[in-house]
Image (cartoon, rainbow, N blue to C red; front, side):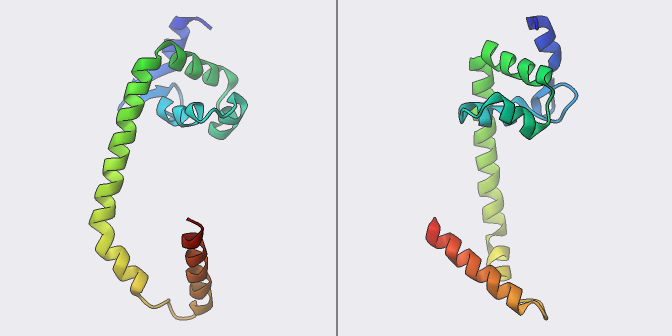
Length: 123
């Protein structure tokens, strides 16, 4: 695949660098590239054709510094949004967690609370 066809396979949308014909950004793929997942896993995870995955990986490799810089910006913005919504919803989450279970779901509620407690102990 030539560099020109790689550029046609990777387009810039309002979401950033995207694999043409999909809603999958290169930043989605970068999460797995950085974690060194095998290409076949990435292809199956995102339901990409072999050509789409090859184009994405080739574009990332050919434009590594640009893609990594944009990827880091996406990571920063995502963290800022997470913090914003966590703060905005802190009171609501506290109120919901203190509320009583809906009628008839007491057993399920207890199971959920026990699961949450186990999860906190494992963290």
